[in-house]
Amino acid sequence: MKIEYQPIGVIHTPHTRTGDAPIQPSRARGIRGTVQVLADYADGLDDLDGFSHIILLYHFHESSGYRLKVKPFLDRQVRGLFSTRAPWRPNSIGLSIVRLVGIAGCTLTVQDVDMLDQTPLLDIKPYVPEFDQHPDARVGWLESALKRQEPGP
Image 1: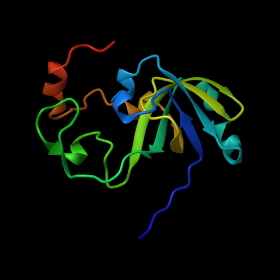
Image 2: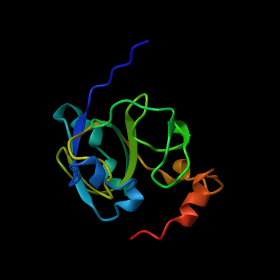
Image 3: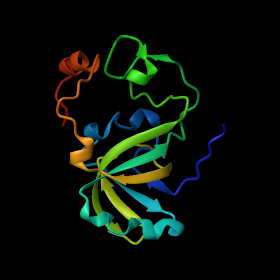
């Protein structure tokens, strides 16, 4: 089965090189960017302005290839790819939850951006705490890795 996606827009950020991009939105607090949605999808933005956060699904356009075992950014040990958020994946799909600052026409101003400039946008979904938060969630190997990290900004 072949699956094809067409971008619905482009994400613009100050991050131009992979080494400069924060590893997650939580490490990109306050960094602003814009999401330019193609005019064909403008009607889909109706009612989005009432949400404080949105989920952006995008294509890792600077990522190529993958390995099923990787050493994550926050750990020293090799882990299974699917237990990490490494960008080198069989399907180069990224996900970030960002703060929605404003909407002007087809341009969304967002904050806490961790993706690269010119990232192709695949979809936008509203972040809904009732659906998306899981207070009893476990984070596996990441729990000990996070304890070793210094507090972020």
